[in-house]
Image 1 (cartoon, helix red, strand yellow):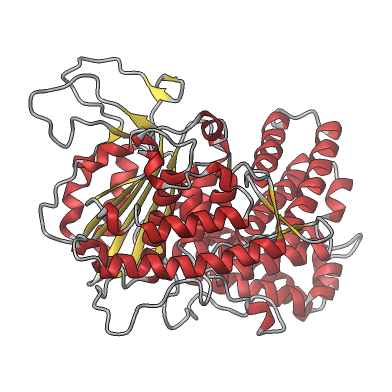
Image 2 (cartoon, one colour; image 1 turned 45 degrees about the horizontal axis):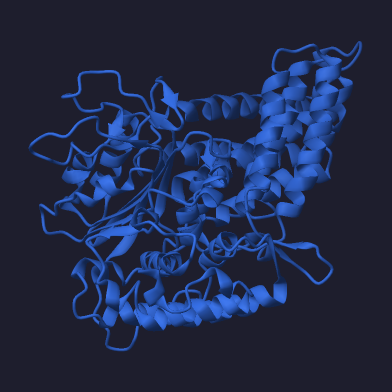
Length: 565
């Protein structure tokens, strides 16, 4: 209410408008704050609460649009307050994406975040002498950048980072705050994240092309007619990142970021189907779930990891697969016991406050005791009662070779190399080579050949050639007479089929590469693949040499595979 006006001077209808707006605003804040108390795991508990929260925000958004003039004059509604509501709706859509793995919700979050910037909702904040308002603006930028990274809008990310940098500089000059270092760290992290890809694809004018590596129509080799494979579907995935010193942004390491995209289809852009924002209500789920549900766990403790694992296991539908992806520092056993069981080979690190030396953890206890802050192979045994697909990217990945399939359910483990040539090891901060192969084989192949850039035309020809290679690898796997049936039981699912094919390609490429000399530098699997039919197949070796020739790096590979052994 303005100036000398008293409440009695305001028409009743306008007074009711202000009262209704205040009620909706308070209710929305109360519900939004309650989201923090919901369990992060489990598919059911959160849905009704999220739905209620979303309903209130939808009403609030429409209400302020319909009554903007009255709210401006009688309530003193500021543009940054509208921006806050839009930002909260963007956050809700983003959290819907995290909870459901439906990438279409990312586009909805993007449309709200984008509108905030286009309409300069936060523009006046810098003129007010309130540091907490500026922090709201900075947080909005950080959230917008995360959504743009996930949607591969790299050009926009660079613009937003520049704007955020200027905003942080202005903020730290105007207010003598203690969080200056934190915000500068945010900038450093996102800058490193953008630069993490080791190879760029260039247009004719040398501008960088953004390449998406999500699952696209036609990118998975179809099953041959009459081929008998399992009908299992990948329903749930735990993506765990606990690598020391790896590039990260907003609780996503670069390995986690790559793997989550390898387990998603290209998002549908809802904005192209509708003319206004926020049209997709979260209860309007697509009829068929396009992507497996995912939990993203950054540096979890053992108990957190086990809780999420148990929740996924409990809610796994019939004929479905649980995938566990572990990108983590290796934990090694300290001594050898007479009996070597599933807790005698070490495993990968779970989070705790402890000493870390050269990336490997230091043991400080009786040698007979097992490492407590470690996920041992034996810890996964109870979960092999259902179909389980495990990927371990770690310096001690081979600990997971020591699996026993106790319950006869389909079980496959794909294990990274444990030793890399120095030139590859030096790049490890920018993400693991093994995960890079599972995410984008051509990016990884180009990187391991020392290429920094590839022209777009050549990249597209190489991708087309790789599609043919993938078809051949698929046929090698399904036609092999000695392959373990577990591989074929997972082969019916498109995501798992592509991961298996990329794994075989990675194994074959590294075996032929002259820099990779030790057996520990090759990926392994449980159960073992029949090498002659797959990773050492002469047809596949011929394909790899053809690809190397196409990229003009054939001198880095053994021409006659016999020379390598």
